[in-house]
Each structure stands twice: as C-alpha cells, then as structure tokens.
Length: 418
Image (cartoon, rainbow, N blue to C red):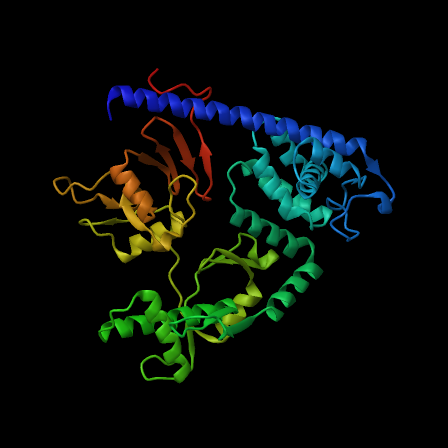
C-alpha cells in the first residue's frame, strides 16, 4: 500500500465513522421524539389502546402506559415506515423509558446506540416488572457491548428467578415441542429425504457424537464422501443397528458445566456444549443420573501454564478455551473449541522455549487467525481473557473476558497520523 493510498484509506474510514456517529445521534433524536409522541397520546381505557394485533396485550410491559391506537399510524406515516414498524418503535421507546430506566439513561447520553437498546427491549417485553428491573440492573453497564445470546441468557435467568410459573410453562412447552419429522415427499433426483427435529440437549449430544464416530469409521474404511454425506450415512447405519456404528446401550456423555456463583441459591448453571446455554441444576442431575459421567479437574484460569516447544499441551489448550470461550477477535462469537490457538507474539524457534504459554496464547477462529497473521492486525492480552486489538489504520477495540467488544479509539476520530 502506497503512502497516498494509506492516507486516502484513513480519511475514508474517519469520514465514515463521523457519519456513523451523526446517524447514531439522529437515531437518538427520533427515539426521544417517538417517546414524546407516545406521552402525548396516553390513554387509560384498554379499548382505546394500541395492542399487538387483536390481542389485548399492551405495546410495552407492566408499568408502561397505554397509548392511543390511532397515534401509531400517524407517527409511522410521518417517519415513512409501516404501521408495524411504527408500533415496534413506540413499544420499544415505552419499554426502555418506563421499565429499563438505567438503559434509557445511557441512550439519552449517547453512550448506547438505539439499535442495541431496542434489541434488549424486544426481549424484555414479556417480563414482569421485577424481572425487567433485574435485567436492567444487570445489563445497563455493558449494554453497549452485549450480544444477542448473552441477552437471551440474562432474560432466561430473570424468568427463572422472578417468574417461576412462566419458567415451568416454558420448560413444559419445550418438552412438548420435541419432535422428529422425515419428509419423504420432496422432489429429489438423489432420492433423499429431509429430516428435521428438536431433541433433548443430552440426546442431541449423544446423536452428534455417534455421527462423528460413524463418519470417522466410514472414512477409515475408505469412503471419499464429504463429512456431511458420511454423517448422513452414519445416521442410516445407526437406524439399522449395524456393527461398529450402533448406539451404546449405556449413555456416555461429557458435559462442560459451569456453575453460577450463587448456584446453591439460584439453582442455575451454564452448559458450554453447543452453547453456552442456561440450564437448571436439576436438569444436569437428570442427565448425570442417566449417564457415565466424565469429571475433569478444575482449571485455575489465573495461573499461567507453559509448554516447551511450539505445540501447546492438552491442559494449556483446555485452559485457553475455557478462559476465552469464543474467538477473541473484536465482535466475534465463534466457539473457542473449534478455533485455533494463536501465539500473540509470533513463535520464534531461535528464542527461549517458553513462548507457548497461556499468557501468550489466544483463541482465534481460522478467518481471524489469518487476518491477524496476514492482514496487519495486532493485539495484546491486557489480563487473562481481555485483549486490546489494533487495526492497520490505528483503530482500537477492547474485547473483554465476557466476550463483549468496545470501540476504545480516542474521539473525535481523526485519521491516524494526521
């Protein structure tokens, strides 16, 4: 890249970021005025209020006022959006202002983009006032960097803590919702059928491991089919109970379970497998009662472990995966269990043999590993699980130990080096 091209690129990025900041500020303005519009059209009679479709459920949750049915269309038309979009805008504005006050403060100060606040509000609409307050208390401080999955887990926790009857209904509905369907009617010259299903998590993990073993057995036997094709063939073999691919009579499953700090009170835990997913301790006990349980030693994430040579040991790999949880690149949430381990400071065979240490290793998915190696990005581990990334143009992003990312580039943003 020539110096002229680099300077032009920096100016383009800086201009784009300024426009983004202006757009964010404009979105706050629209949101504030939408709330003001709602407050001008508060009603007390449910028959006059805007609801979700033909349902009597108000736009926002308990504690937020009802608004006139007809004010929705007028605001939507003025903003050039559909009525449905206008209804969502008003619902989110009411939800945040009246039920998520700490989040609302951050929106008003410009610290939290409206789209992030609305994403949170969408998930809390059905919560009780107490449960919504819990989410507000827990999420407000890091709402600027929390992802959808973490928000879902926090909402699930609020339901479990403050809405036990609703939690029981959800669990029952999930159990009743398990199914497996096989569609033999689809048109296919390959004579295939489409299978869809929803299983108990432990059952799904068992099936996944069985298909992995079956696919590996087929490959060892000389199959040149793709992994997906071999998995499908293994499923057929399981159905026929063929030797070497049949299901074990005794369940043997490894669950990566992390207990909540107050698990003895809340009864909550997180299962890392294909997740993370919030579960109850009772569910974990049920799985363990039906399985051959594998216990793994507790790993101290604050202790640095070192290997001699380039390749990390199994213990180091497990410690880094548990510590990082996901790829540690900015805004990435791909599982660390399928990621590469990257030497933050590149490994040099001519230097002392203590470079493969947990303080110099991080989880990077393959695309971001390549980006770091060949794309000019670099990063530093500030503390275990926390990383500061620097882009080729000088922008900085802090990825914290909870998997969130914060843009920490100094503002106002001028082209680096100008």
